[in-house]
Length: 380
Image 1 (tube, rainbow, N blue to C red):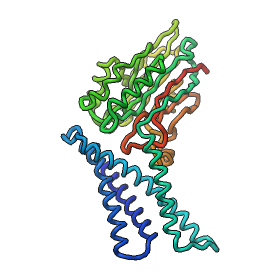
Image 2: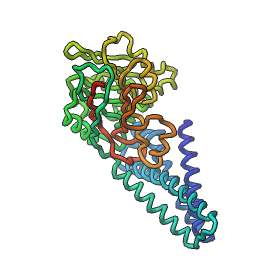
Image 3: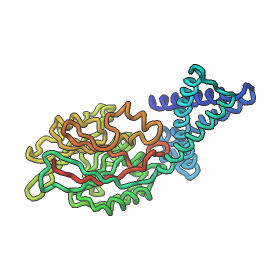
């Protein structure tokens, strides 16, 4: 409920600010004021629809999972994303306008308001259009990851990493099939899914998850829970994935063996479990009983555990969660909240890779295409 009020507050403040800023760019007049604030009241109301339908009320639980309500929620999220970008762009133009007006000897004509408004609209259209184009599109990203203590027998092993698919009202079976086809074509030795596979219950997404049954890899398929699985149906997703032959790792590890050499793959629960009083993730605990003379890789939905994983003795960590901010302006703001946002990092000798995610959450927008990663392990 706190999150609901937070979303409501942010959307309201952003729309009031944008409407007020736009109003100042026009001549005085009640009719113009009514038109500007009326427009933004309509946009504000439309933006509130999507969170209510898909996250606070849930289409699949309410009997509203119809083409009409799905389309309405989709439109609402598009407007939410574009208006969010418009708010930041408007604020940026306002700062530039203020600096120009207060600069000594710089004159601004009467048309400046219209010119800046045109600039806001053009910039928003470009940023929003690009983000909408990339939403729901995928690319295969190839990465070579140096791993300390990697046994020679595992040098060159490939791992396909899938993360943050967010199956739900807007991403379904076709999106799953695209991911599965991409992974199968890459022929990885191992497949890992690092959380946030879905935004609804396993029963509601039975058809959407079906293509994942076709995944196969010589060294196995492994999954760790993300915060979104815990929000909706943790038990259902664990049972569903296990029935599909996917190993769900929860504060535990598996030992893989090649030519007498060993590689440990461990997985932790998501930190969000602390909300319900459960034990927080513990990379140290996952290695209980693990062979000392082995390479060690941790699967953790959130990259925030990297330093703890390094202290626990892990050589590498694969994560997701951040979406790299997903779309502007969050691609900038994400750096204030996350130390590791996307790509490959060296964390005191531990190699960390943060996948920017395959799907999207909320607005169907991404500054960059979604990602499926093919990681090649390299002894270092």
